[in-house]
Amino acid sequence: MEATLLSRSVERPLSRTEYEDFLFEEAAMLDHRRFNEWFALFTDDAVYEVPQAGVSDDANSGTELFYIADDHERLRYRVERMQKPGNHSEWPASVCSRSITNVRVTGSDERGVHVECRFITYRSKNEATDLYCGHHQYILRHENGALKIASKRTFIDMNSLRQQGKVTIFI
Amino acid sequence: MATNLKVATSRKAGRYVIEDKEEGTFRVAREAFTSQEVFEQERERIFSKCWLYVGHESEIPNNNDFVTRKVGGREIIFNRDRKGQVHAFLNTCPHRGALVERQAKGNAISFRCIYHGWAFNNNGTFGTKMQEGDYGPRFNEDGCANLPSVKAAGYRGFWFLNFDANSESLEDNLADYKDLLDLVADQGPNGMEIIGIDQKYSIRANWKLLMENSYDGYHAADTHETYFEYLIEAIGHEAHVDQNARVFDAGNGHAYIESDMPWGRPVARWSPKWGEAAKQEIAQIKQELVERLGPERAQRVGYHSRNSGMFPNLVINDIMAITVRTFYPVAPDLMEVSSWTLGVKGESEAQRKLRLDNFLEFLGPGGFATPDDVEALEIAQRGYAASREAGWNDISRGMLRKGFFRGTDEEQMRCFWREWARRMEA
Figure 1 (cartoon, each protein chain N blue to C red):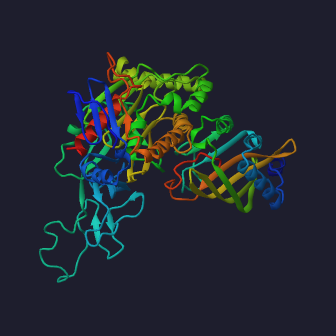
Figure 2 (cartoon, rainbow over the protein chains, first blue to last red):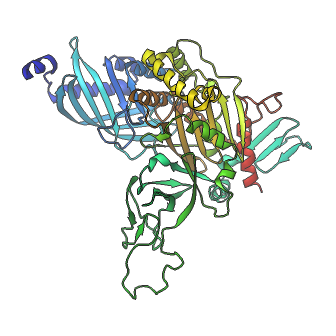
Figure 3 (tube, one colour):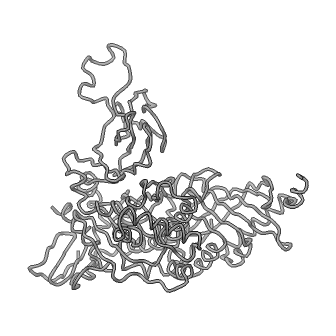
């Protein structure tokens, strides 16, 4: 029984460096504003969530107020909006720099391989530079031979958004 | 200040606010948003004199529950004591001033200062046993060793405090804003509750800009173009800002607008994007409202949207979700915002999720609308750098309108500014 479950569901994890390459490329897509390419990384059942700053990893968007709790459809519009002049807080566009470190493969289940990393993201606009630091939790799996994001949760490991005031970028 | 405004008999002109009822003009000096002197006077004349929102009863449901937060620039403990009585205390030790509670929330029968160990019952009374001779025999007869208490009062679950011992009562001050609180509180058969914690963010602009913005029906179509594009996709037909929204002057600087907006409301206006299961549940919620409140009031409570401001700095927007927010200046050009969401106590998991989704789509630091407001406020503040040459904001829209003021007029802001001027220009 257990063996069946495993063979049906669990994907054999790649090496850490292969996931690193994936995450570095993802960060570059965002830094370079290649948003459509970035959105294509997500599976059709993907979730993209940013809980409130400082909360713990078990935060639940069904019972707590997040900043962002997107399904695939809302994420599609978020990506579309990101490229509209009517998206006032990001037009003219901010300049961002994302560093990804401490990449760890933390497990796997029927949804895919769990990968976690730390991030430091700087966003600069209107002569102000804001810092976001924290960790991303991914669930990654292969679809049609390509590695995809089934879930991305961005935890801002800061007490509040008093300094930055907003989450208008894909951190 | 550059001023060449026409003088007329119907004109009321203060240093910062000039209203001419005959001409239909209302102007506010941009200096009111930039001046250090105004910032300091506001702390004395407004934030030390007015009723300020401290919290919702659902945040401290049980005896001994507490939350800590900053209100009016002071550190506050908002709690329920051993007998269930609600208090607001200054979170400062009467001995040497340190905070006596440093956690954001919890349940505690007493508070204890880490510095010298002074401890306080959660009704504020000093509770440390001292050795005989350490203090005189009459020490604390005047209460000088008790936790300093702040006058607090509640209405329909919303609690407020006032640092001015001589202020008018909360109910007198609320005036017709009680109607707004009733319309919100009536949504749940078992009451309302704050969901989770507040979003704590900031805006690089003067706090009064957020008050104006929060019930500004005029800006919605332009500033929030991309939200309405999303909404149109979601509901499958055209969406417009209600041009016939009504303005309610609630007295004492409080005001609200009530409108028929095209978005879905968890209580109780179904949206096509929620599907058939939600349609049935929302019909049941509507039915409960009708039975409890009667058809007319149920329609008002459930179907219509409201944007409101209680002077000086509480916003309750009962729109596609309910947001409760306060904001304080930390400098003339910087405010700190705390924003909560309110839901129906005991609502289903599906309703709760739908409510939170509805909130996030529009509101908060990652919403499809709030960040656009923030940008508008921040660039207004930047524009005020030229206040010596371009000195006045215009808030005249609809002043001479026949019939009733529309939500897309600016009467609600004029309600705020008249009260602000009354307190600041006296």
